[in-house]
Image (cartoon, rainbow over all chains, first blue to last red; front, top):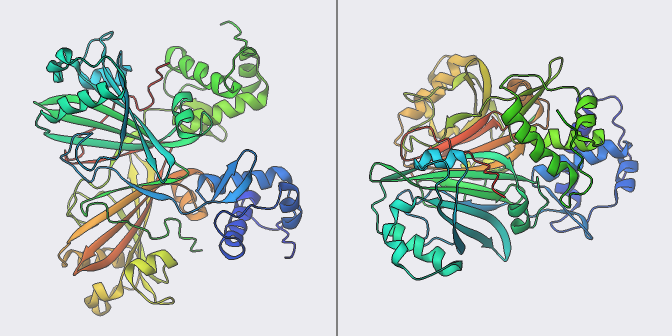
Length: 253
Length: 253
């Protein structure tokens, strides 16, 4: 394997290095393989360690590399497709929903959620926490805020906390007629508690999917789901979760 | 304004600083306002410049800050909602589609796209380039690959290149009955040409939406659309583009 000098390239050096490295990953490495250490890689490509690190960070962001403490940098498997929004008329917790209820507690929601639910500034709602695991890997964490008025019978149900209470809230939601839902996805960073649940450091890039559920002419629940951006691609559409897998980053000139 | 020492906090310093800064943005700054320089900020919070920069990068990733050359770091406006996938049964270029055709040329698509379109390894397809602008700001760039066999009459149309040819390809697509489409969204980084079009540096985080369009029992077109992750939130659902805006990053304890 030769040394590639990058001195004369007009684009940012780390970006050119990223492209060269990306091609090397395709041709010389297999999924799960551990990369040579940073010093050797920097020497091979004739770049400073800082440039190399920038290129590695880039490839990590793109889901090509994984960096794990005590293991090093490995070649990442293709991202997993996780279906969001394919069942347009289903409540969370319905049939075919793979999320695991963790617990439910009363909480005052953040201001934006309170505005959507039209609750008072200091009014508590049901906060259901759920998690999604695929192939034994934590994939996503959800905070589902449910207006107390939407599930009036819950007060009479004798489940004080934990997964049983979470299931009770979800069961009460199923009684309502779902009129529609509306989602948005954006880039965010993992909060400390989500990061722990997702096995990442705080601040790791995540895809945040916010969903409003409508019933009786108003928003009765708001879900804020945080997906690992390194390992997940979110699929949605009207073909019911058919896996889509063209190369999302064609490297045409 | 006092000095906040962060020495004794157990979570990563940059992460705690990010939270403190985020609160300061809410209470002390307005949208568009320029932040003090890094030296002053680092002194105010009693942290090293490197820690400060990590926290600023975090807030930029979250869309709270914008860094522009020659201007400095400013407080970002809320992200724009851009509807994707609300019109489940519309071809690109149909009524109500705000994308601007730029040009159309024959290109050999990346391997993943070729596999989806079931074209041969070195077979060219129509590549339509489009761009999306909102409030005068570039928001997204699209590469739309259309199988030559799907639009057979195009060969007879006398438009050699440019936006006119792009429109001709889209017009031919409208003749087909769209059987469905399937999308996926994931985190990516801007390629050099997209970066230029989006007014970003190569490698800037972007949301990549890949969409397959089905007609006649096969995939006839694949769209790879790259949205600025700093300024966009992508909305989808069955309520037709109603703006969803609860705080996507609730900072509950």
